[in-house]
Length: 542
Image 1 (cartoon, rainbow, N blue to C red):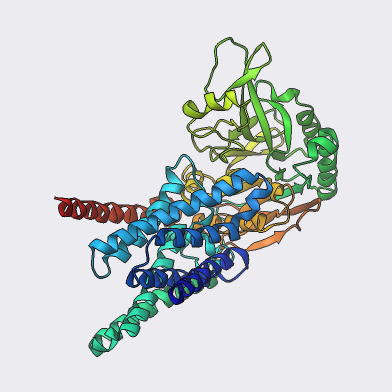
Image 2: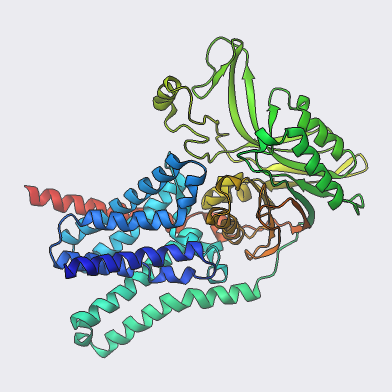
């Protein structure tokens, strides 16, 4: 019973230490010791011969997931519970591999295996997984402690995950060495070397980050761009029922009129959030009533471009199904749904891109060849938006009279896409001089969800060293600089507008140029040790 109480205490402490940084600003450093109670619990359970310990640490991972992302249930109860259980199960499986490794490896190798396996799993989530939920990537814990991780422009967010594991394992090694008495068996040089190494791992990144933060100068060799965004603030659950699309459109045009009263004819990017309207057909977008109203408004501002999001559809008038994700369009054909960002100006030119990173269930049916036939039998309850399949920038056109004088490439991550670290670097590799995030976070209400999502844009700003203009339906809309600081932002759940300027640059960070080296190296190390583990297990079976 004493062992059980100790395990409950340790695992509860782990869940608290890992949850708080995602919920409370400026406490990201707690994760640097957050795994120590879990590692201590595993050691206690191992020495006590505790059976079925998997259930214990799975419960701890589940508590962490539920404490930090329970708000997903505000949008979909089933989806929220599935995300928490599925994510916790994968975390537990990674930790189970570590416990298996401890039975076959000695010394530090099982712990290196654990860190490498965890980061390899996070990279798989970020890059390859059909169903992915990278919200709790360890490096995201510093999203509201950005002065600690200015070096993300070198490593990306998985560099933060590596830092967390390195410090946790170092602290745990020190604790076990002291408790077992091994510390005093080491030579004085060994103790000094270990203490110095742990101090450098703990403090070095902080000092390096602070120096970079204090000495960083905004890059703007490509100029700047004025931005004006309207935060429409319509409850996404009610907006199509209680407020007509025409009323919503007139409301935001009114916000723009207030914001643009002092318009001097210069280039300005006007922004609206993701899925602002759902009346646009890709076959002929100009026939949309919303489009016509927005185009008429834009005519008043001769050198403005308008960026807005829409739930769109493309019609196919044919008998055969054009795509596995298509749905019937009455008796006349089929249609495919998209989550689209449009950018257009007064010249008649229209640029667009479609969302790639789709939310499972509400937007996307995973493994469509397998699950779409099943979903058809259930009446089509899952989302079937089709991803674009590649990253595309949108071009802002600046005119002098009728002459095009400049086109500014802008990366436009749509909502959930801004959570994916290396994915966002593709915009920069393709030439984006700034990032414009459009999102609708109102599905979750006044919960930690919208604050967490907002803070992740700061990490993308650091990784890419790009200014970010973020327009959200219900907040938080903001202008974020290249150090990840919010220069101006709106409140939550109120119609508002925001004006400012973003810097433009062609500079490419180390992370943009070379990608996620930390994730790739950890994946290689994980596979190498996993292969060795399999060989050892098979050798013992013979």
